[in-house]
Image 1 (cartoon, one colour):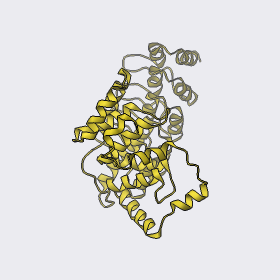
Image 2 (cartoon, one colour; image 1 turned 45 degrees about the vertical axis):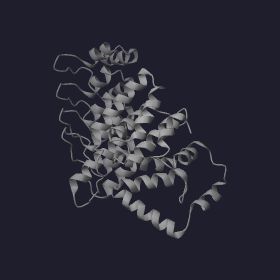
Image 3 (cartoon, one colour; image 1 turned 60 degrees about the horizontal axis):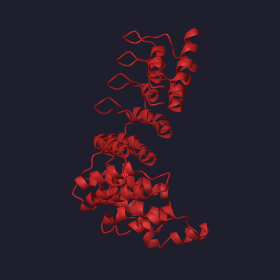
Image 4 (cartoon, one colour; image 1 turned 135 degrees about the vertical axis):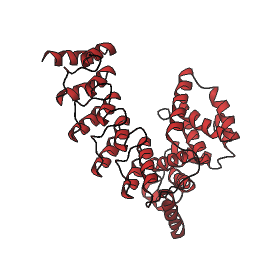
Amino acid sequence: MAKTLLPLADALPRLDSTICEILVAQSRDAAAARLAAQGTPALQQSIGRMATAAEQGYAHAQFSLAEIYLTGDGQPRDVARGKQYLMRASMNGYLPAQLLTAAIAIEGSVAERDIAEAHAWLSIAAEKGSKAAAETLKELEKQMTVRDDLRARQRRNQLRQVFVLSQPKVLDPAKKQPLEEDLRIATTLGDEEAVYVLLAQGSDANKPDEDGRTAAIEAAWRGYGKILDALIEQGADAKVTDGSGKTALIWAAINGHAAISERLIKAEVPVNARDQEGLTALMRAAWNGHADVVRVLLQRKADPTLRDRSGKTALDYANQARNPETIRLMQAASRN
């Protein structure tokens, strides 16, 4: 175990085995591994009860399932599914889950190691009184660059804004508002499995938050195509606007999601709709230098001659952003 993680050893007894199972390839024959992981009937019943509790929102059950799937203890090992359960438990405020999430981010492979993500979770755990998290933070900060620190602050602020890290709540199908709030949270997280479960429980996909954002708008601006498809299939109105007048298409354009923009236009979201500032999706995409989105919007008949309230066109915004490809596309469109 790395020196950085030593303070977490007492708080997470299975830390070594969990991380090793994630990082080290298994040499056992796949069929033999599945057989070994099946366990006893009693264990399978216990896992079944745990899964039910996890879907009802109990964070301790989500964490236990995460460990089972991450280590292959009683179930076939499934790292992706284990990480989903782990993130859900972390978002529900379960301290051991937050610590393990941080540990995995620290000890991940070169491609997956994320010091900023680890720092954000450790900070939240430390604020809740975890001495292990506070001690680990000190070790981690010795390795951090200025860029890491900035990203950690951004991630920490995002977590604080979006998720309630307090008592776990039970998802009661008889109470519509909690379900709908959880649907927006699951969408923000990109948790496809949770979205499917909540929709199956009857969550209203069109219920907005206090800023007027629906789950579909959240999925669009974050680039979650599969979740957006599921929401639309279950009756989500992709054409709605939020409190600032922005459609899901405008949000997708702002963040450079070309494939999502294509999906939304096919779902009949008006391509030339304006937000409260008079800007269209094309203007927003040009302003942010997203050439791929600009190309999609122009192919789908976005009007390059429209002007916002200040009189600017999409070409003006492209020039302002100084993205050569975007400028070229807008100049060509303006000549036609």
